[in-house]
Length: 462
Ligand code: ARG
Image 1 (cartoon, protein in one colour):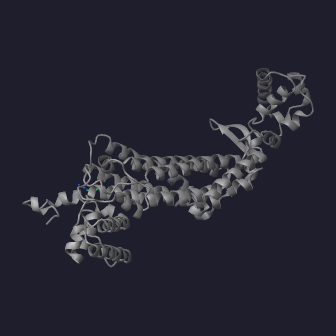
Image 2 (cartoon, helix red, strand yellow):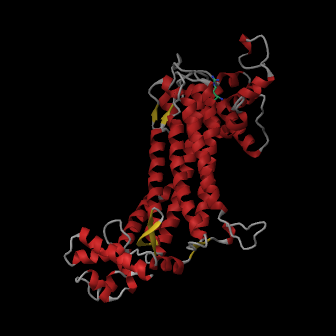
């Protein structure tokens, strides 16, 4: 018989039971469910809504139950629809009336709103820790490659010389923003919904602030209908996770390209690459490809959540049970992706000679050649045209700017002198780009220091 047996004259159809049941996926919130119930029982006891003895017995049995679930002596069963009913049923079997009193001034609607918040709060801390670890690896690697010259691209065409440090630090900025987004999400989630009841609060003299305090929230939710209907925080987290995946996916694409023979910039450690079942020469970047692929799956989770919520009238609707599988999948996927990606990046070998060689072809120093003329007094647009002519000449002669003769330069503009060769040396091109945020080693060093301070501020929270 169901908990609501009083009103019903028939058992629920077996298929409806299965269809309704969420225990197969919300069972993972057992710890949070128990933690929420301990706080609720404590508050009920303190407010005299249940007796002190009952409150003590409930808290003790709930703690006991937590240990039993953790060590596997108690199993959650599909007979009870969800995690909330599983725990309540077990308690009632053991404590009788006291167990039945736990649900006073509470509904599964505010209970699930609390559980999912508590669960995601823990997950956000974990995800944030993993992004910070990746950030650490990026900063360390960048500091080893302040002078590793490589091509920078636009339209995937060689554009200007830069350094690997500059490249890695670009990703470090994206992940820094991801960390702060997770922190924002955590802050907005910091409101305790218990006490909202089914939707309209309760007639019992409860103390919501006390429950919030026991659970480590800094405030209580302000409106009981909103408390049980709000899944913004789930969607916000799914968006934050989608952005992390988007960043990982772009980086993965980069790594996949860099591992190709055409680029040859990177070699993955054997532990983070796979072979082919037929082609003995292959070393495939599966990890990066899977991260890129799983990004699509996380976007799907976000889209599912947005769509589930878009037409729901207030307050709770069973549709909202669909939030869990989507957000759990997003959380699980981003965690494993961050872990393997970080390890892969940390262990890869950079082929500096290949990066440097790619800078020599493709006229990456053309802008610097024009800047040289600007320094000699020519307006930039005119300088641009002169260098355009030189690039055409290089094309005709099958050479590059470094190998044109001084006569060829002078024919294009009398402003050219012997020092042009120095000005278009890729290392000089990079070193001269000292503007804030640029690739010159002193500039990237500054970026590293700021990121190190960012990591240092968050050290204790790891
Ligand atoms: N398993 C439900 C969920 O995940 C819990 C809330 C159920 N409330 C209800 N009135 N059916 O949303």
